[in-house]
Length: 205
Image 1 (cartoon, one colour):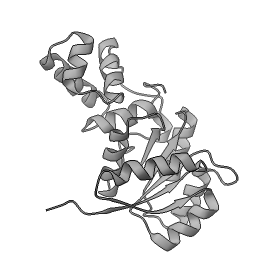
Image 2 (image 1 turned 180 degrees about the vertical axis):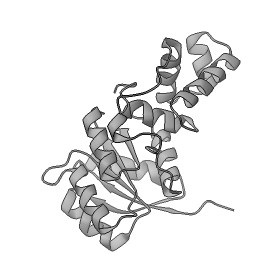
Image 3 (image 1 turned 180 degrees about the horizontal axis):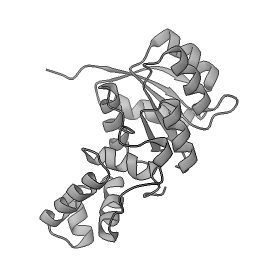
Image 4 (image 1 turned 120 degrees about the horizontal axis):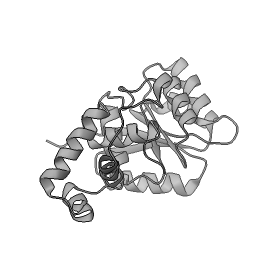
């Protein structure tokens, strides 16, 4: 049985970004990009028309920025699920996105596979900020230097075998490091670790 179609709306003031995201999602097979918006006002109008499962929302748009747009959208549609995208991950920006009700936050330089995974999880109702409170974005159980190296490789989309080859470790050792990272960051999978890593400032763009 094929997976259910996920209706996605993309909001970004740069047409190349919208076209690129739409093309990438189309290649995945079970995504339907139902609308594209250039600014906050269009987001509110088009969301009412199309009721997408997941909204991909640029943080920095002219006029009504992404965070204020999300606040207004969630006031009207409390169940709206949005993933915020930005060219940088400033901690205050991430905290504001969480406060506004975002389900996730990713850099535009992130690997496409991470965004695809996040969209699917958010469509299923999972918030990748569930382990984080805006008041403690800067607080986390410290990762060891080697765990940080492994997490950085994960953020680049590397498999366990690729990480093992790059860091000259055994595959078993890599898996142990990954297990430790997930435990310290209180998340279940790699996509969550990457999202939390950026949100807490452990990872940098």
